Image (cartoon, rainbow, N blue to C red):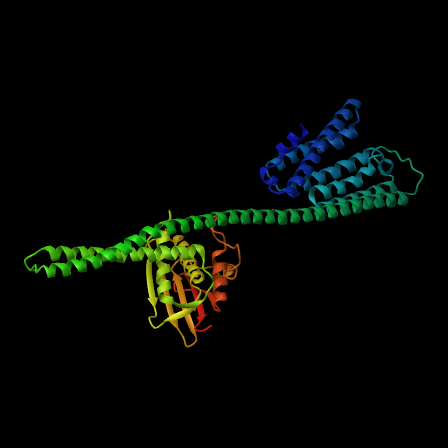
Length: 467
């Protein structure tokens, strides 16, 4: 019941952090307790006809009710606490005045007010009430010296200075203990919150890593499946290519036989039909060879190779895997139209490469560019464009892959090569593509730089001509 009442007076936003919620519950609890105790004291004073008790406690009852209302109305907690503790100091002082001054049994309560203020509203309110209570003590000391008392009673055999020092010492000791407790609690709470944040960060990172590993496993399974399908497709493709090649040879033999029969090509449609069949067969062979090349690339990319470095036609490799990456993007659910511009230096011959590995570099960077450009598709008059360049210097071969996407912010440019770092949401990215790319380039004795291009991001790969 009490918990529900306390919760009713606490605004929703004070539950955002544990520390705010704790202070809010403590403050509202103190206001409610004081409201009930002053109501009880006032009613009893009214019943027994004790006017001093009614005068000293009834105002505090109404002030406590007002503070609860202000707290619920989202008035600043410090302001509410200031109003409450000011009223409490006046109320306690008035009660002491009406109950015998230094001889009053109420006076030890002066020591509790700064402690409660410290716990409820922090050090500033604690200092305020501490000095206010010490001022009240000095005031009562002066009253006693001049015999000022609301009741006319004075019953003590101890020197007034001794009583004053005892009360001041009691208040300061209690306040010092409360301060140590509050500081220790705050330190412990901060330590706990810090550890909780660290633990939550670790948990989030573990969850992200788990999702990435699951995604990697899916991709690995998909790669195995793709390799199996490609292997199965390769067999019928071989038959198509072999039989089309064989059919072209048979047509040549048919032509020779027709000539031997001395059939005039001008008076017969046979040679025209044979020419058409030959043209069709050559087209079948051309496209079959193209399909065979694509399947072979898929098999190399999915299986990996034996790590052998051998002279490789870089331009042909770039052309092959840029097209493979583009066709893969076009088959995706988030496909888009992209202009592919190849600016390949024809003077570049063969470069020592591990083909199966370096093909991953080309595919990863192209896919990275496609993903980046997809983020700008909502822009007006925007046409995605991927530009691939190769050129050479006296000692190096340079490959550049540039997109016209949003670019890479400066603050994350040094991080994107780190493992598991990704800007993609959820499990869309594993954060391993560029990390693997960087490793492969280094294994080839080269390096990769990331700069802002004319519009988007530009990846520059430098490879040595001889290794």
